Length: 253
Image (cartoon, rainbow, N blue to C red; front, side, top):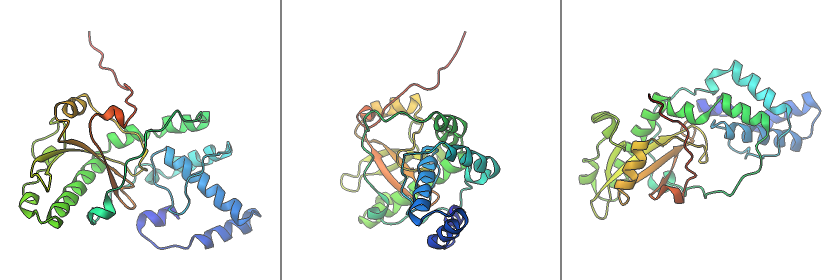
């Protein structure tokens, strides 16, 4: 079902469930619940899951081993190829509220922690240059449509894909504009195939730029990119939205 979902092929969930019910001798509710457990694990791994099977977090131990075996044999679900650039739908469809800053979560099962370490979604997204570039191209299209729909085609023509035109290191990826004030906005794009709560890296340069441009710098967090892309926006100060934890240290002599 997930392969069909990612390929844009229609399928009927009930038929899959009925086959599993017959094979396993389990109830419909039991099969549905197990699919929701699978969604929860995939969500923790920053991977897409089947719409309609909303994640449920009360795991059972055997599920981790089964998912690990599957992912070891099916690398295409770990490093999902970036398909054609999604259509830049209207602003009301694409932009969604950001997740709330959660309180301390319940303890993560040891087997799940090991899976997250093995299939680390943060590093996987960070080093997936194809995914990052596709997400930035999507944001350029979204911003162009947003400004055009607001009657500001003059500003849409001035959008710059900074990371491609000038190279990395500016502390933002796309230069766009506010449709009301015409002032520039500096967009740092972070893209994942996972859900809104998938963690991501921030560089020292990006954090410094956020501090230097608190009124114009924004994170555009693109998520569910491979299925139905959505964007939420984070404005400085970032500590009010995110838990910032040092992860990599530079060592020198």
